Length: 393
Image (cartoon, rainbow, N blue to C red; front, side, top):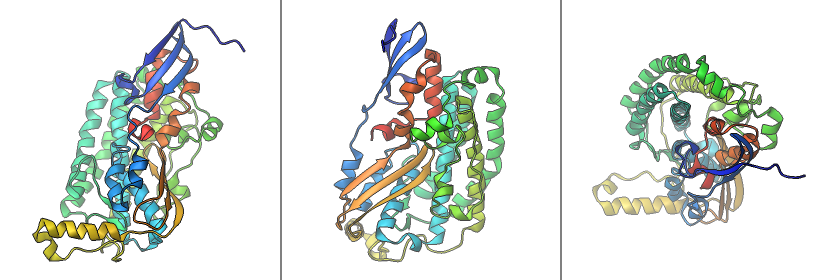
């Protein structure tokens, strides 16, 4: 079949601000219409999977914080669930730690969606939404700082539990946030949902039907906007999700507009989940009672830096899963985030592979862009919410 003649071939990215990082698109144009497209990735490849194979299990966590740097807690959670599965201790993780994990994961989802909403709206011309979304996201980062000490890279998850218990200030400020945040979601929707410019830029643009989404392995909000209700939290529950009531938002048009609607509803469901966690969370420890996994520090180790370093060496050397292989996944803000680990019985992963939802979701881009106009490219990329640190790893 003879290839259609083109008028112009242009590069969009990797420096373009609206390609969500260093994504490069090669667009073949006939007028302003796209007749061919290709994606070029790899500009921020850091080899994190190989880095993980040269580090002990506890030392891997800070590396994965920086894979999807907008959703660090989700990355940590997926990894610790996989290691706990290898160790056979999944059922022994304290209940309070499991609830705290869910709270942090859902706060991360809201934070990520707020960043997506603000930047996506800004790219399509809505300045106010960007400012409003970042106003609320700042409150979530304050909560992260209170419980974990870090705002972006929290380093909160641990194999066998979490780093520390929630402080009274964290719980108080979290309850305040949950009270006022639903009204803010309504505020965003007042600005966008029926806005005629927003509708013209998103309705019927970048349509992915259900069958195509499934065939390409797409997950997350992009899949649910195409009419498929797959959500790891429902189909393969982890932590305490099977004890919580929440709905999986599903729409059926598969366009940019429905991907927006899914994420807006997901933020409401995250609020609902966190409220249940606060009601049901019991008192108790937040780390497993197992010296091979977690060694509580004696009081004297805090007195000197040498004592702290010696204690840390004992902890990181203690984790040695038996030989075997495992896959564990969580429902990240962008879709199914999975970890495949092969253990040879040592204190380091023999092989480690990440299933990054952003990479899978943008694989459809060359097919998705055909027939659209250059102006639609920004809308389509934003609706997929790719994170290039996760794509390239």
